Every structure is written in structure tokens, then in C-alpha cells.
Image 1 (cartoon, rainbow, N blue to C red):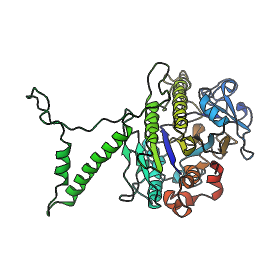
Image 2: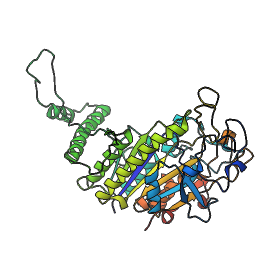
Image 3: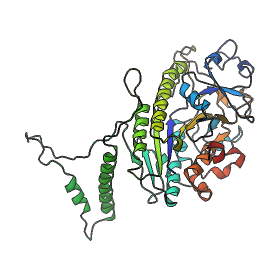
Image 4: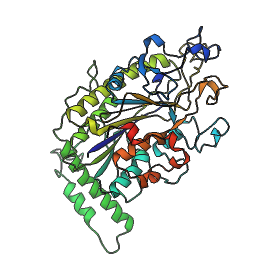
Length: 441
């Protein structure tokens, strides 16, 4: 079976949804500029504007949750059972409480640390220098699958495995590939290049060896030659490839997210020429750190997410690959439920700050979708067992839960799961999801 796994890192979790068992004012204290109540709406999304999502989960505290109105396509995917939501999820080393959460081996609420560790999924340092997708790819490669890993968002540790186990990940520009034709140019030469193509000379030079050649020099030369061959093969595979879906917005431009997802779709279309059986992709976008004007800022960003995901799904369906694709959205952390006072200090243009637990979506044609998983706080006051200052919520579901369902679907054996997820052993099985919970088998 051919399988694609897309890891989408949204730097600073988006305010996707609201979900409360009853009316907001019962749970939120009436402080000025604070959480929503009868006199101050805070940064809560107006209930009448939300897209109501039934949880379809008798174990969930909410019978329904509200999705931002600008995410209509995700709502459509949910209704056709191609989307799953997980509430109050985040990076966890162990089941944390208000008494021991500071023992977590990461600088909580810090962008760089939380982004890195979300991609690594190894807070105890057992698999140092690797990422969760890289470890998955290592084990699948050892099992005989033809695996590849691509980042369309620069070099990312999420895709790194142990040295020498599997092929190295490839970083590609969202703008596509340029043909590699190194040319020697001289400012004093007016009739063009002295040589049309230096590639054969570069390969010949780097293939040369001697008895006293150093290990470092030999390794460097081998890497250069391999990169040239690899680039040519991928360039040829993508040459002339086009997409049918429209990734441009109404103004005719493509956002960074759309460009990255378009390049991902183009790579997926080449799976046969690459003899691929398992492909991993990393896509990432920033711009969600809305310390001011969070309500206004989300609207345009969600419009973009909605449009780009719709184009990507349309293309994957056109290629006949949607049922073999799973796209997972991650973030380093959620945001405070209690807003700040805004840039002027008077509540005008209020935003939200760094927090912890958030909400996540997963989409794919093979999902057992139309369900909301995870737990949800019953008490949002600071007396609640999960609530830290200013509405920072301790997650109740770890990232390990998501990967516990996805990795086996990708083909990772039960024996290899502790290698892929070294923190999984810290959680009871009831806190983790399974392949059967996620996918139609």
C-alpha cells in the first residue's frame, strides 16, 4: 500500500474552536479585559458565528463544539468523515498536573524550545538528534519499505533519523526546482560562458581518490556527487508536471502555505517514477503569534488555510491518492483563553499569549472521521485542576496519542513503537489512540 504522511507545523496554535458544556459566563471570572462573560466578550468567538460540530463521542464532555466560520472546508471534510478533531492536546512528557508540570523537561511557553521538541517528540533525550518522522522512516526502511522524506519548509529535525539507517531527507523550495547547470562566468569575457556545463568536471573531480585521501574529504565528495544525481532525478521527475487544482486566491496570488502544499502534491504525483511506498512531508507556516488583534488576524489566516487545504485535497483526489494520505496539523502550544490588554494597554486590539494545550485537526481520505477525540476541561477558572494562570490549560492528551494511531497505519510494527515514540511508555494505554480508532481498515 502506498502511504503519504504530511506534518503541518503551524507556529503558535490557531484558535480553532470553542467547546463548553453550557454557557460561558458560568465558567469565566468577570475580570475586566479577561475571559468572556456577560459584559466583556474577551476574545471568545461569538457562538452565533461558529460552525457547530457534533462530537459524535459519548465519552466527550461536549455534545458539540464550535469551529471558526472561516474554516468551512474543514467542516465539510468533517461531515463527510474525512476529518478528526482532538481537543486539549499538546506536548507532554508525562500526565502532568498543576503540582508537577514544571518537571517537564522543556522551557514551557517558549517558541523555539516547544517547536523543536514538538518535532522531536523525545523530551527525555533517548533518541538525541532525531525527529518523530525520521525515526518512523528508519523503522519502515529497515522493514523493507521504499521511504522518502521531504521538507518544503527548510531543514527540519522532524524528518531526521539515525545516521546511516535510511536516506537523508530532502529540503525543497516551495517555488519549485531549478536545473543544476553550474557555469563558469568571467566579467571580462563578453561572449558568454567559457564552458557550457561544469557538472561532468565536478563529478569527475569528486570521484577522484587516493590512498591518502581523508575520510572527511571522501565523505564530502560522496555527498556532493550523490546530491547532484539526486537533484537531477527529482528535477526530471517534476519536469512538466502540472496540477489541476487552483492554489491561487481571488487576487491571483499563492500564499506560502498554498505553495508548499502544491509542491507536496506535485511530489506525490511522482511516486511511481520514484518507486515510493512511504513518503513523509513537512510543511510549516508562521504568523499565528497574535499578541494583538487576534480576532481580526485569525480571519484572513483561516481564509488562507481553508483555501489551501481545499486545493490540496482536490489535487490529491484528482491523483487518486486521497485515501492513502493523512495530514496532521501541529503547533508548539495553544494560546491563553484570557486576553491581554492590547498594544495600547486599554483592551483595544487585544490579543492572546503563549499557553500550552490546544486543539488539533487531522484530515485524510482513509480516516474514520466525523469524531472529536480527547478530553476537555470542565472548569476554566484557576481553581480548575487543569488551569494555570490566565487560562493556560495543561494538556490531557499527548502528541504520542496521535502518533500511536498513525504510525501503525504507516506500517510501523508494534515492536518498533517504543523506538519511534520513546515517551509513549509514560502514558497509560487509555490515554493513547489506536489505528482502529483513526482509520477505516
